[in-house]
Amino acid sequence: MAVVFVAITPLGTATPSVSRWVAGVERILRGTRLTSQLTAMGTLIEGDLDEILAVVRRMHEHPFTEGAVRVSTSIQIDDRRDRPDHSIAGKVRSVEEKLK
Image (cartoon, rainbow, N blue to C red; front, top):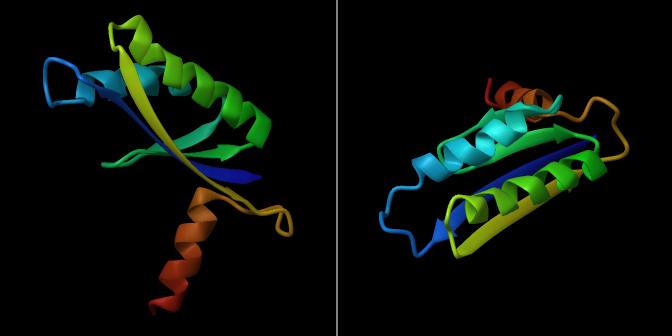
């Protein structure tokens, strides 16, 4: 299973705020069966990498349909294949256990 961090930002809009744009791409993600977690700086997604990348492509395209003329998308992929339980929660739990 892959864990992917994605941040999608429209550039050159009339306002410095991006929350409206983030809400638009988040709706696309929430319409899937993928597990995700919205954060203050982007979104974490876990699941099959091919499925995630297909959804990220749709998410990247969405701001253009809302009038953006330029979109910057950053993707970070953690694709661990030696552990079937690789997940967002598992990664957090592993660090929290080491903090005790």
